[in-house]
Amino acid sequence: MKRSKYLLPTQKNDPAGIEIASHRLMLKAGMIRQLASGIYDMLPIGLKSLRKVENIIREEMNKAGALEVSLPYVQPAELWQETGRWEGNGKELLRFQDRHQRDFCLGPTHEEVITELVRGTVRSYKELPITLYQIQLKFRDEIRPRFGLMRGREFIMKDAYSFSATEESCNDCYQAMKLAYQNIFSRCGLQFQSVEADSGNIGGSASEEFMVLAATGEDAVVTNESGDYAANIEKAQSEEFIAQLPKEKYTSLAKVHTPGAKTIEDVSRQLAIDSKETVKTLIYKADEDFVVVVVPGDRQVNELVLPKVFQAQKVRPATEQEVKKLTDVPFGSLGVIDIDKQVKGISQIVFDTLVHPGRYYCMGANEKDYHWVGAKAGTDFIMQNQAHLHLVAEGDKHVGSNESLTLVRGIEVGHIFKLGTKYSQDMKAMFLDEQGKQQPFIMGCYGIGVGRTLAAAIEQGHDEHGIVLPPQLAPFEVAVVPVKYKDPAQKKVADDLYESLQAQGFDVILDDRDVGMGMKCKDADLIGVAATLIVGPKSIEEGVIEAKLRWQTDKQKVTPNDVSNWLRNGFEQYHAEPSSA
Ligand code: ATP
Ligand code: MG
Image 1 (cartoon, helix red, strand yellow):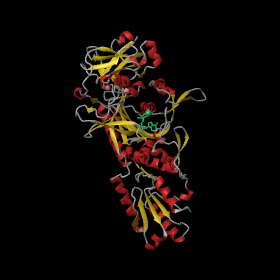
Image 2 (tube, rainbow, N blue to C red; image 1 turned 180 degrees about the vertical axis):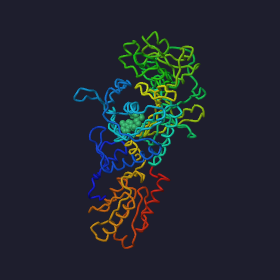
Image 3 (cartoon, rainbow, N blue to C red; image 1 turned 120 degrees about the horizontal axis):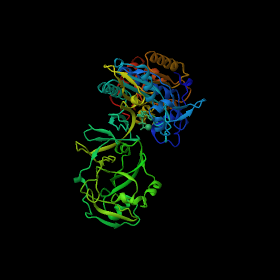
Image 4 (cartoon, rainbow, N blue to C red; image 1 turned 120 degrees about the vertical axis):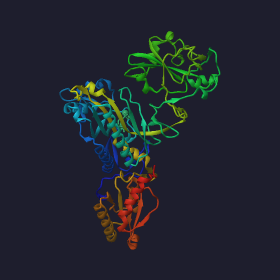
């Protein structure tokens, strides 16, 4: 490819108002261009790198025995009504009508469509297991699209679905996908970790996310010291041992005056106690019911576990208005002692496992400006139901190993999930088993965000000059940069090099523009070309080419004959140590 004929609108200055490096660099390098919020054009080099990610994914999926299909982006409402997700999904599902007033949506995922396909084409256990995949557009009307391709509204996903006759076979499919994912992310040169994830309330039995470790990641990953435990924060479990808790200041029940104290911090300060000695009493709406959740004052509620705990479809904090309808107690003064007398219509109360029976706590007294101190858990308030409701915090102990837990940030690039029979049952997707009986397919689903993976690779690989992608993802492997292309001797060497490297299968760009060297090298560095080969008068005299790998600072002199070997060796080194992370 010749640079002068190429659409590569690199920018000199940083685009304004961009929060993270990968987004800034993808715009600056002319990889992507925003058309609308969360909707992007892929420009030639952006698409090239994206295709490289896709090809790695495709190769590994095929190697794992998955079959590629292509399913429609526009999906009829009837399918989504069969699984209850037409009504169940919120505004992320973009719905619209055709000219006949029939309802459709843009596919945010393809469980319904693929289940419909398999129910119509697979009859017998003899045809199972089968794993189908596609690399295709998705649309999710995300509430906060941001960070460029990282969280778009329209984005490319690789989604795969497995259909099995037995649990064991489903496990095998899941393991095969897990291995494929490990190969994919390793081949993309990423530093990643697979973590246990919550399978939500679909009833699936296992779920893991693949996280690229990066400080700007939106997810929190919890690990232990020996590194054999890693979980998404919403799935992570921790213990807090009584021995580690501060000695309580108040050990008999008393009502104290706490003027103006509305928050845990206010109360802790006024009473000079640790926030661990307090409990928060929170009201949630679980489907149509109001429920109460009690957690230590220094803890946040893991809202993702609440649907399971309360056996509800949807659980959210009650609004201030809703609480006002239930009780006269001011919002910040709720306490669990006598709550059933003070708040009408509470159907359940669940205490966090960190509220220890026998310990003494401070809590709202259901009265403005008053708190209870010295309230003994299990005596002054009964704890019938307890569950792990808190989000794990740095320094908590890992259940089992007793090692301290650490929190790091991650970008979720992939997700694998055992679905069980949720979709096949809802959609009556059946096969005939060995006994000739109808059985629902046992399913798994497996997603990778393709654009997000590329963005994550840039998030891990960049420096002050621009993008540093591993060679296998770089938009070009080699830039041939003549100092002066108009000079016939330089043109000859540059053209020969360009042609011979291309003939040997390298992905090469020749910078044939009549501009300064500085600009040409800067551009190559900005877009993350893996190696730059400079052809100038001096090097012609000496019969060598000045060569530089993107992730190294030193230039080396290489003879034209040695260039391809030098490139191959250099690219292999990158696999060994991704120094740009
Ligand atoms: P998130 O929690 O980040 O919204 P998710 O749990 O909704 O992700 P899945 O439904 O599991 O994601 O989708 C599979 C993969 O698709 C994710 O692991 C991620 O890599 C990618 N993905 C999901 N949403 C987006 C998005 N808005 N933009 C880009 N990629 C996305
Ligand atoms: Mg999402």
